[in-house]
Image 1 (spheres, rainbow, N blue to C red):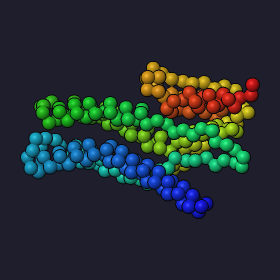
Image 2 (spheres, one colour; image 1 turned 90 degrees about the horizontal axis):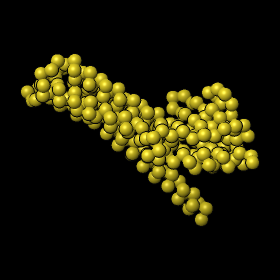
Image 3 (cartoon, rainbow, N blue to C red; image 1 turned 90 degrees about the vertical axis):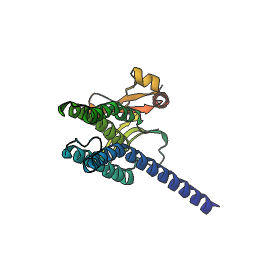
Length: 237
């Protein structure tokens, strides 16, 4: 029976890992698809004389490079990127584990879409100088990459609260951890702006002193209230 239970647990873990991998690959494909399709269309337009043939060759080349880079980065991050799990000492009990929400990352990427559409319209349907669609494209690209980088970064961040310490871990190309023992916590606070309140997310700030190494900010998590309550329950009365 124990062997069957272990096999069942291993099978569930494998299924969860596979689902997360497929989800990340789908997101990466969605991020790269508009650039690959737009670059491919502009390249084909010059060959077959379609609408948009006036787009400079360098523009379609740059767009294709961006799309290809997103595919490569997304594939690598999906295969190699796993959220870190902090090692617990004997007798230590995990109370809460959270990862940052992806809503801010998605919001930035969605916000970039009107700029890309505006740039595409200007460059294909108007005779305006290329500098105008180029400015719109660069603004959209900035917002898009801000969101994409936030998404990829959040894949590798873990916040953990145990009965002994609060842990922030970032692990990808390097490992960065911050820990505060529960016995040294001097303040716990919640931070939410208006948009975070209406979307049900926010941050919990834990401090043991003054200075960046003495503060852990559990940023942009869904439903931060239970995390703050779990921390307050650990404080001596």
